Amino acid sequence: MTTTKLLYAVAAIIPGGFILLACFGILHVVRVGLQERRQRQVAGFPA
Image (cartoon, rainbow, N blue to C red; front, side, top):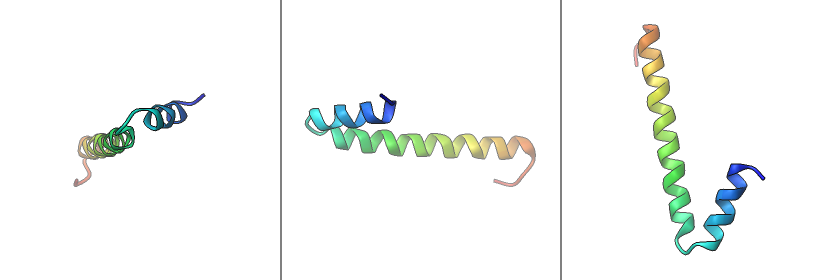
C-alpha cells in the first residue's frame, strides 16, 4: 500500500480528515516550490 492510499484511508476514517489531507497537499506544494526556487538561486538563475 502506498503512502498516498494510506493517507486517503486515514482521511476517510477521521472526521475532518480530508481537510487535514488538503493541508498536507498545500504544505507539500509550498515546500517543493521553495526548494526549487532555492536551487535556481544557487544555480544563478533569477527566481
